[in-house]
Length: 427
Image (cartoon, rainbow, N blue to C red; front, side):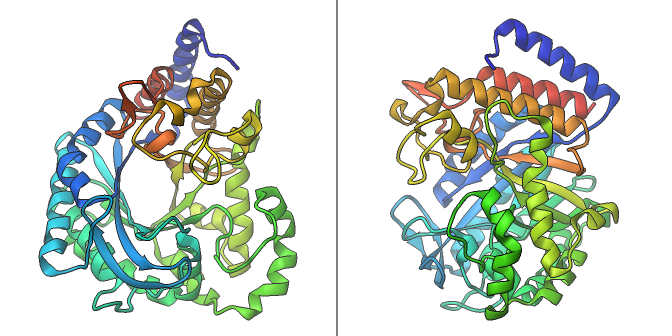
C-alpha cells in the first residue's frame, strides 16, 4: 500500500477519532545504549528525540557485554567504545549508574515514566543471548549478572525517579536458556530488584513493576529445530518438545513460579508477516508465545486476566539480511524476517527504505499495528509496544546515528502517525 500525503491526513484523523472511543497501548520509543561513551555523549540527544513522540513512557536499553561463546559466559565488562571493554570494578560500576541515572532523569523531569530492559551482548561477535547458559547469581571473575547488570541499572532508576513516576524494570531480554534452567535464581532477583529501585523513596508499590522478557518463540532456548520458519517451529513444537525436553536441565516448576511473581510479562516480538496482512496476523507472535509457555504450565491469558501487564519488549522492521550486512532481497524477505536489519551508523548503501516498495510496507505495518493496539491487540491486551529504535529498525528517528549526510532510516510519515496515535491513546 502506498501512503500519500493526502492519505496520511485521513489516516491520522481516523486514528484520533477511533482511539478516543477505545484506548489501547502506545508506541513507546527506546533509547538504546551500547557503551559508556554513548551514555555520556549521546543519551541526552536520544531522549530529546524520544520526547517528541507523545509517548507516556520512554524505555532505556543499557547494554552490558560479556566475554565468552554462544553458550558460555566467562566474564562481564563495560564497553567504552567499539574496541575497549573494561572489567567491572567499583569505579566503573558507579560511572555506569551515574550516567544512566542522569539520562533517565532527563525523561523523568519532562514528566515521563520510564522502562528499563536489561541487555546483554557478546563482546567477541554476534551471538544470540537466548542460547547463553548462565546463572544470574553466579560470580564470573568476581561478579554476577545481578551485580553488574541488574543492580547498577536498578540504582540508576532509583536515583532518577520521584514519587508518581512509574517504572517498568525488565530483568532480561531473550535469555531463554538461562531463565528456563535457572528460573529459581531469576525468581530471587524480582524482590531484590524492587528493593533497590524503591530504596527509601515514598513510592507506591503499583509504580514499581518488575518483569521478565523472552523471545516470542524458542522460549526455552534448548529445543532445536531444523528450520527457522516460525510457522514450522509452531507446527513441530510438540513433537520436538517430546523428543528433546527430558534431556535438558529445565526447571519448569520454578519457571511457572517466576511468571506468577513478576508484574510484567515481556515478549520480544518481531512479527513474521507478509505483504497486505490482516489485523489478525498481528496476534501470531503472542499465540506462538502462549503455545510454548504452556509446556511449563504457564497460561499467558490467565496471567494477563489476573492483572499482570503484557508488553511487547522489542518490535520493529529491519529490512536486512541474516548476516546484517546487506539489504533484503525481496519484499517477502522484509515482511517475513523483520528481525534482520543493519546496524548504525547510517549509510545510504545500508538503507532498505530507499526502496519505495519496502518503505510502503513499513508504513502499512505501522498503520495496521496502530489499529491493532487500539482494538485491544486482538486476543491479548497489550499495555505498551516498545519500538526498537536503533539501526535500520529506527523508523522514528530516535537514535543519534539514524541519519547521515546522505539520508536517514527514519520516515516522517510514520513518525507523524505514531505521534497522532500516542496523543490519542494517552489523552
